[in-house]
Amino acid sequence: MTRRMPALLGPDPVFPPVEDALRDPDGLLAIGGDLSVPRLLAAYRHGIFPWFSAGQPILWWSPDPRMVFRTDGVHLSTRFRRTLRSSDWIVRADTRFADVIDACATIERDGQRGTWILPAMRRAYGELRQRGHAHSIEVFDGDRLVGGLYGVAIGAMFFAESMYSAEPGGSKVALAALAHHLHAWGWPLIDAQVENDHLVRMGADAIPRSAFLARVAAQVDLDEAPGPWTARFGDFRARELAG
Image 1 (cartoon, rainbow, N blue to C red):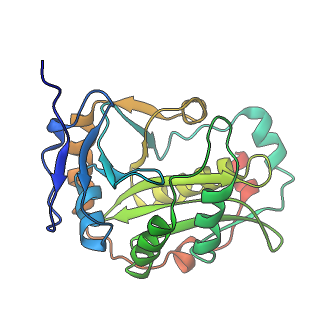
Image 2 (tube, rainbow, N blue to C red):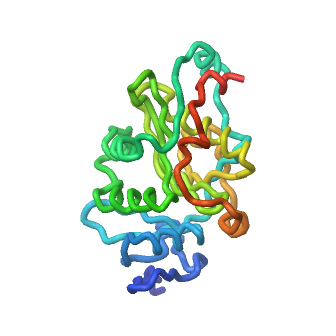
């Protein structure tokens, strides 16, 4: 049997149907193209994201199943909630985007060598931020960043890209604070892309790609204007997540 190859993209920001994605490796849909704002927005609207390493061409993915968080379903352990009751951490949005994406790119992770957040990716998401579609959630201990995450918002759908901790629990607080705000705004889901044990422990679920895409199609067309979230998010005290 001839092994099917992923599509090769041309200059237009158009993707093949996600049903054409490979099963091995799971979700690989297309190769090539660019990281322009129109292409990235078209990709996310259709449940597709870029993920590639140094020396590789741009690779585009749409895995099946898809990991998601319900915004009312992020789990923090009882023990961790207890520590938050005395926490002075403050969570903000879109005040240190470049620092968050740089930290996500450079922090050491168990079982991972190098990074997929290459300079071209940082520039591309910086352009998305300038257009009001990319956001960072930042956890502060005083003036020091102790954790954060970044991702892409289209309509009322948030696509998480990466998170990090400089202190234990920093990324958990960033994710839980993001979910807290999105739930209050009426945004039901956070895309978490692919499964790992940490996401599962925090409450992420695997759902069929078809179900994910149906939810995305409804959410991305809702009337939510792009733009910074700094004022809308405010200064949120991590202790409010203690319950």
